Image: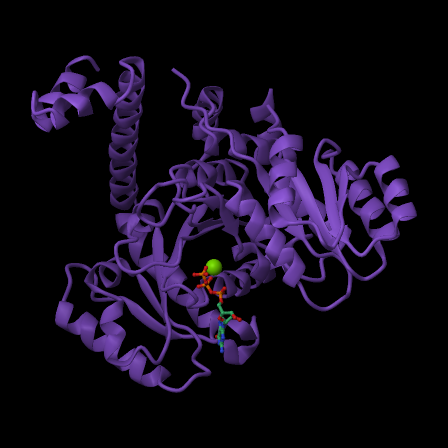
Length: 311
Length: 136
Ligand SMILES: Nc1nc2c(ncn2[C@@H]2O[C@H](COP(=O)(O)OP(=O)(O)OP(=O)(O)O)[C@@H](O)[C@H]2O)c(=O)[nH]1
Ligand SMILES: [Mg+2]
């Protein structure tokens, strides 16, 4: 059985299972169900932030910190699928390749495949496989995003938002939504001018926000390109993640429940959408209905309702 | 009801020591434009790094760009590393400045296709679509 191999740590079997989950092979879902009892021990960390902010570089350095502590690290990095070609270039891994031959590190790249929110539909599942395999830390890097890429918060236990100095008044670019999900805020590229100002600005924004239960967001400066060198600040990032985890301690059950709720809701929506698509296909697609609407014989709502009726 | 959506996944890498990866990037772009998912690992990759990435990423094929003249060692080394990790079913292809007699030998030894420097990106994209099947 493949899941036995996965649980034994067989990399190839695990990678193939992830592939089948990503490709939505029905039998893979059954395998995932069987793996579920083995999940729950890995600590899942989400990394999000502006395009080019240094997320992958930060992940690379975080891997080093965790490896130095003898923790095994799984990474899932998500890049966008082109809506035109359906293809994708998955380039986050480049920054982490020095860990490529470390057997304590498993890096997997995924394309969004049309999913909004900065993750792929399979991200949660792939992270679950890594969890079942016994990885101690599972880091998820989202698509480099504007503002509504907040899905990661629902998947991760600690969400890290990465930004850079020099956004100036544009610091508003990290808009409300993304600030709100941050458990840890990182000002990366602190070797550049304006890092302290960025920290101050973020501090004010958090202060204004006042947020419920979000007062304790730590803001950390970092130079991710310096790896684990003292001046890089990466140790502070890791520490901030740890202290968030500590603070979450008592509420961990609540957070897990919120996470499960969000996941179930997303699955229900996804399954419904799949069923709607299948029903439409079985009925010969949208052409007939659209013709009716164009000819003025039917309004679009009635057309949509007619599809729903036969779900 | 099958919602299964297989997509080809290709790893593009640049093994060896030579310095720029423009060619590899162009190929990566072309394959993505042809609708494939391309894992790009960048410069200076060792055969073991390439094979490990190919296994973790569960790719169908590995495309290597080799301009350094070391193709007669690097192609076999990558094929060997894949085999060692149980991934001998991964298709290996590549491109670079490679003399015809070397091409013949490489093709006889497990490399599926070698593109000449002048090959068009469409040609490469199409070849992958036609020759790399998605494993089940
Ligand atoms: N000066 C400086 N450059 C950095 C730092 N961290 C990352 N970079 C550079 O910023 C560029 C982008 O880094 P990535 O790690 O790829 O950024 P990313 O956020 O993962 O990018 P996307 O995934 O494309 O959104 C690279 O050229 C890095 O070398 C830093 O601390 N200081
Ligand atoms: Mg990145």
